[in-house]
Image 1 (cartoon, rainbow, N blue to C red):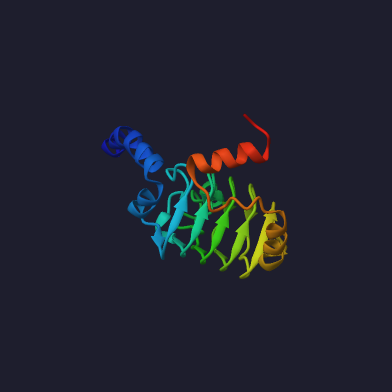
Image 2 (image 1 turned 90 degrees about the horizontal axis):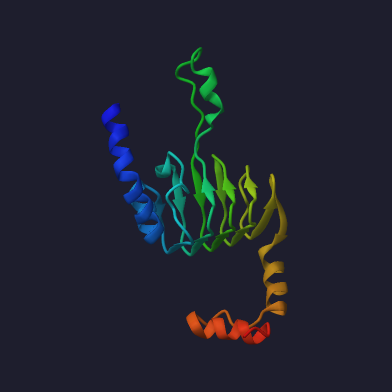
Length: 178
């Protein structure tokens, strides 16, 4: 046990750096199942908790900084002295074409359907139906994706296709910044 802890002390900084530089590759390395193209903003080091192999991510999934996927229920720990084999856990599945906002918390036994958006800092305790936008604590359906897209197109700055310096300059022009 002491050797394992020592090894973790030395490997943790390397893994943290790897997760920050290559968050998707790190997620795969620790066992997250990827079904297609996934983009992770920020580090994935602490994103997938202690059972990353219970997380499945679909195609065209975007995960913002600070999101967290929890596949176990640690509330059983204090009771293991009396019930040693007590354990609650479940898979987390994310469908295709999904955006998960900054700081969102996805709990065990949750499936997020296709074409969904999870709002920032939402706590997702129940499965999310296809084509839904959820937000809050606990997360609740606040809109249908179709309705959101209509509103988003009306408000669009029309610069989503730009990248890098070109996008920065467009933002500065739109918002009158030097």
